[in-house]
Image 1 (cartoon, rainbow, N blue to C red):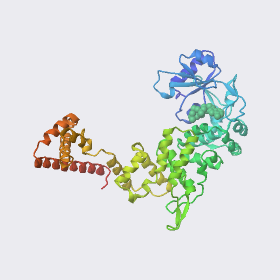
Image 2 (cartoon, rainbow, N blue to C red):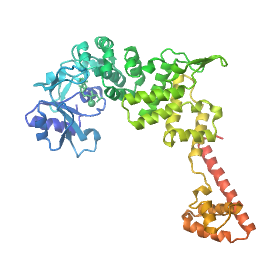
Image 3 (tube, rainbow, N blue to C red):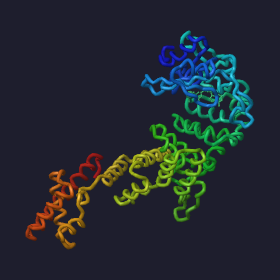
Image 4 (cartoon, protein in one colour):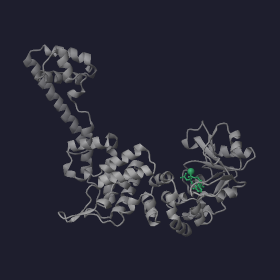
Length: 487
Ligand code: ATP
Ligand code: MG
């Protein structure tokens, strides 16, 4: 196994050199057996936390379970900056189904592997000798793509219901299936998830959403009967028929949209927006006699509210929540294609923020894919992009000048009127020629010079400048449109 980085080998080697047992364990061993790149490197050892702190120069206590973070300042790989070293332990009773009541250190590796959740996560590997310790036959389960609890499934989920979330999360992440007994126990103990702190659920939920197969994960939640403990409103969309434009019922459309977002490598915010975008549909479904079809009026607003509540419960940060809520709230914008004008685009941008313009377009693309309709007409999508860029660019206008009309009236004792417009336009022409002139001192001096000109001459200058500027504007808009190949 030569894919273990030298930094991780060094930690194991130093512990062994000091007379302790030390192995790599958990996700990193599973990942190297699968040929995946591990997210982090964990070490298990019979050394105590005090021993570990003594042996390594730079360490900190990571949690209440005796884990010590061993810091490596030399490496540039963020995954190797901190290697977690955890003493062998067995866990005490879980009377609250969340945290073990006591943490007891164990004498040997075999006890430590026994407390781990799934066989695939209960393999230890010594990178120096090349030996694996795999008493629960995790390697075989990895080969067969099976998630199986270590020990009796019912007992293990009864101890810690978060393992239910983890089982589904790993299925989505690794494309594994649940072993029969593991699946049956999840169904039996699914309701104990309600005793788990929502923020712990939230961490696993994020990993599931960011996995390559979030659709699989959410569908598993539903089939296992636990979706109601995570996002209950999603379940209400199952088999809810939509209008004729939609091939799929609400729930199926939602998970397909989410999967499209994952396939496009979208951010957490866009994926969550995909998950919540139509969640308000079941609550707003009504029959519309005029169209002789179903309508879901206001589902965007209702969905935004549901998203806010659920994401708060799952303890997402405010900026994530804010972005998702905006995307859900305004996701209908592009549906009324005939109504899209520059001023409508301007309003959209002020509603979602410039930073979310790309996101809402991506959400639209995923929404269409999730509908089973043909892809967005490429022309239309390009047209929206061009319009957005036109709205976002700073127009060439007297607004760019370092002086305003009011400054000129004050400094030059001019009255409001056409003369101010001519002067401003003439100043703009000067600035376009030479941007270094755009300071208020210089422009006031120039304005004073302009004000001494005979009126017809000033008028001619001002109007010519305005025309020249309009030509520049037209040319720039033309450039944007030809960049997107639209009219
Ligand atoms: P990832 O690659 O996503 O980090 P991982 O398997 O490393 O996956 P972690 O949450 O980092 O998962 O946990 C590290 C190891 O600790 C697991 O491989 C497993 O052996 C053990 N573990 C974590 N959570 C539990 C739990 N709730 N019950 C039992 N063992 C657990
Ligand atoms: Mg890990």
